[in-house]
Image (cartoon, rainbow, N blue to C red; front, side, top):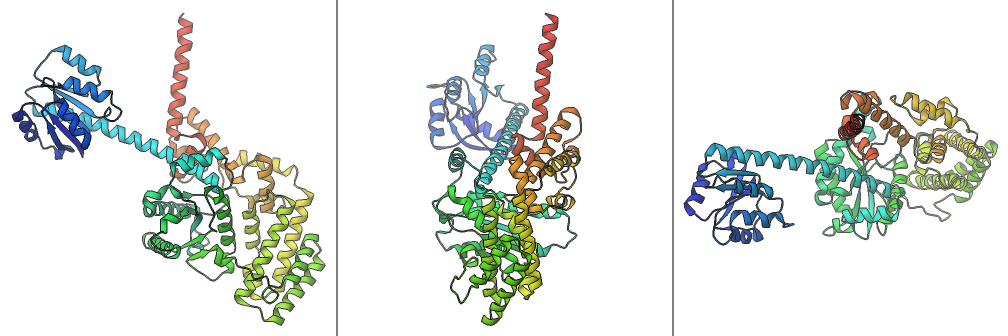
Length: 543
């Protein structure tokens, strides 16, 4: 409802105006009345109004003076204004137009004329609200992109300052990752279904967070086929309870509304937003080890990553021998070290959770070996490579053959990193991306084609091009979309499908993140620019 203030020095006119039409039916609500402009200004100090209907001729302060004061006021300048007057003098109308009066109705006021004027105002308000929504959408997309860059650890002080100005945060923060349990999906589930569920999960999270909805982000992971949603958890959000109670209620709500099994992974608590990337990194590690854990609804980093380093719980000596053999890529020594490791476990009766502790130690050390060779190594991709091996399927069953296979493959991987034998292949991959951008391309596919480990290929790709394979592919698609927007009359959804996006909303969001505006606005701005250029050329030719 649009709020209306009636201003007239004649009480019977005010009564007649109130009874002339069904204001509520037209989408308006009369919130007050005043006898002159001064009284109207006093009313506005304590009440809100969207529209003022005012007479011109009044004592103390007339309608034109009231209109003038509103238009020079920062607080009231956007209030819609309709003049009611018994004077058909052009000078009055001219003065009203000067101060952006929205309409001018002669007394006695006819019902049809008033309804027409009100509907005009309502139309203007709807246009204004739509513009505000579009602007807000763009602002939120931009803010979300900046927040994601901070979470990923690729930001600068200005970016952090910008986000802190627009999002309420505390000094103690955690990154919480939310995923739909992959066991819910069959092997033949299409990506479009998973993407739709991800978007729904994202919207439900934002609804639950309410005033803190801007804490919520989507697609933080650069990993292929990870449909992640996450948010920054601050201390003040659960100050009336504890973290486990708060997140317990949260995940219960998500499961009930979404109707699907949901998992939360809670990163380590960090001091402030500048350190949130560390919390995100710890959440990623827990996600990668999830298959080795007892099934839970919520995984806390501090609980999941405890490693007992005493000689009773951890087979450190034999694991270090194994790690040295992997580093040397000595397959014979790897097999001997695995034998020693399993022999010690049998002697100590190690199984279950303690076994997992030993696996965690091994996984972390393998990651460290890769980081020593290249400090920019993508930890997430390496952990994915390891977890997609045979740890879960074999090691936890006590199969030495499985551990030997994974260890030997990782030794080959490290040797491959040292040799950097993939020079020239990156050029071929880039060429194929530019030629086949509309297809469902993956690092795994290229790795198999060029006999390279997919994770390692991803590392080299990022190092050469300064961005992930996924981002490069998306940017290539957006470039082609821009070409089609400028050179064809295809509809937006047709262009999205042509360049490789099945989901229109996902395409629009990606376009906004790259170009800073919607595809429709990009096309319109380019068309306007071309028209202006054409006019200049025509004028120069005429002259």
